[in-house]
Length: 249
Picture 1 (cartoon, one colour):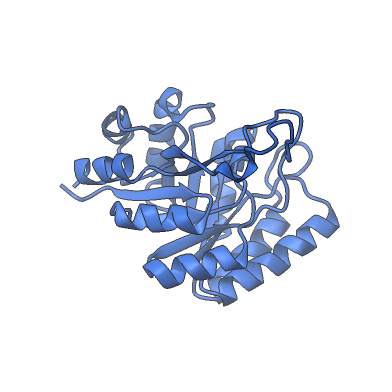
Picture 2 (cartoon, one colour):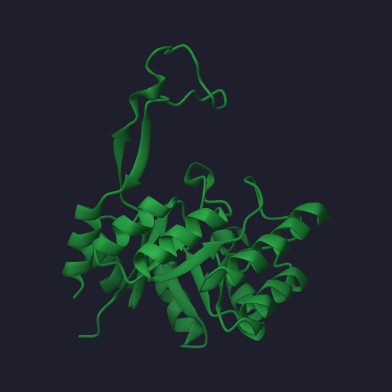
């Protein structure tokens, strides 16, 4: 049986290193995973590439909250994309929609061309999960030469979107790669693969670590009104990723 490719969603260079040590095939590097992933820093890409040499896809998303960006945000996204490609990114992950939730063909074409001109991959992310007609959108993405689509099957958790993911794979018929993700765990990854026919999966598995440098004043918070604890941060759980990788060999 052909091995199922495992892509790990990472939020830092340390995440990439842990995913690499766990045997992951590919990673998607972001910042700010709490908001679904934003553009990573060049420093994190450079360190991750230097320490692992693995295939690293980089997110190009200038802000949280939707996918219809201002002209300034898109200009910044273009600058980020060019810099990421110039500094070792193996592909760009992005999604551009119009205000009505349909595909922004023009902006998508620009990013796809930027990636392909550099000999890299162009991946459309889970923005496809909010479009009104995924079949029409897939046809447009195929026409634009997009290499891969990350999707949860238009559900909050891919486990509830398995039927749609399977339909997407069948509908695509090899014309574009379909990458299921969002909610894949050590308990359900086999079922996701079996019920969709997917040849690759996208997952995130984190554990908490403690940074005690803020304990002198627990009244201080540096984030927004959610007030996350300032003495904890997340890192990829190498044990869980390794278990999934080995289970799919």
